[in-house]
Length: 323
Image (tube, rainbow, N blue to C red):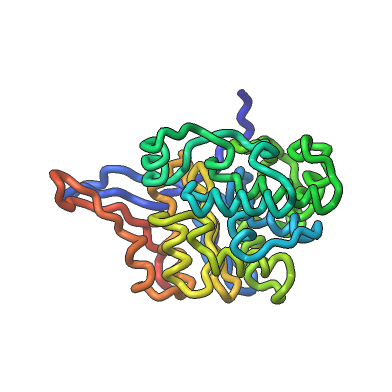
């Protein structure tokens, strides 16, 4: 393994137990104003990271530009890391069926449902890992439907030389304003690109500020209209979109979180060790700095830490200095 650069991450969140700081979560974060200026940052938001599933909304834009037509619920699932509930799997099947395909055409990895409750119910029903239950099945169903729309090969839709793969690279580069130098493979089998948090914040801002009816705006509107399909019941991304009007959010594995507000201001962050629990609390101070109502964010900040079944501390994001 070769490592060329360790990003200069900084503390983003702390967990306390009693009177002591028990754990510190490091990472990098950028918050952009509605005009694209940098409002605040921590760590090294210009360092390249893999946004992982947070790329899905940008990939959905590429599919719409290629002529794919989906109703809003199916489009939301195309941009989702869903929990694997019945409605998620059924919607993915609908995308496939409308294109004359079935789950047998999927080429994503197999997995159990991602949601805790959904996985427990799935296992209790005697089910094992499938491609449809895997959290990226909506994206893969839409990728296949895009190929059908354009007469592109189905079996090789994940190949680097496939025309859909080339289009996705082009759109991601355009929306982020960055060239794609580092390209690897995500867990589900699609390409994943090294991009800066600044570039990703810029891309999410572009989704919410695009003109109505454009591919960018259609993706943002579909996700905001169907937040349960973007993640699932009990997931913080779904809850945040339900709590804050006009907010667009997408998480990613390895501690990635992207958020855009209706005015185009945006937050992008990465927890350095890939841990998930500090992702949302770390975003809250930046959202407060962007003017989001503190009452709306209360459920996502200062998460309780328990001892003996009682709260004895909290996990919270570090506030930014007020000017």
